[in-house]
Amino acid sequence: MNRLLVIGGASFDRLHLPDQTVDSAGGTGMYTAMAAGRCGAQVVMFGLCPDPCSERLKPVAGHLTEWLAGHIYLRRLSSLSFT
Image 1: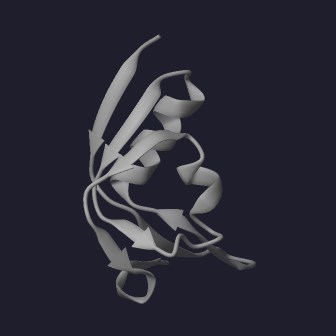
Image 2: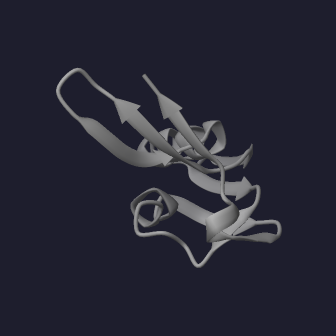
Image 3: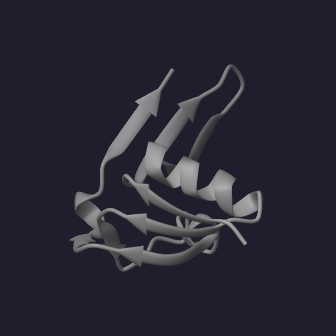
């Protein structure tokens, strides 16, 4: 099995679509880790881990074999908005 170390982070994304606004997990590290996990890789992510883990991030975090590095308070996690 392929193993992959992803260095990056997670964030909360808010997508403003023409007919709705969608809140989702985000972050380039999280997107990369999720895609690699779906392709069958064992993924370890090195980046700040929100504590406690948000319900929005749990499905994505489930694709990780391990999440390394320090913890960050959930309320301090980056939040981005895309229009």
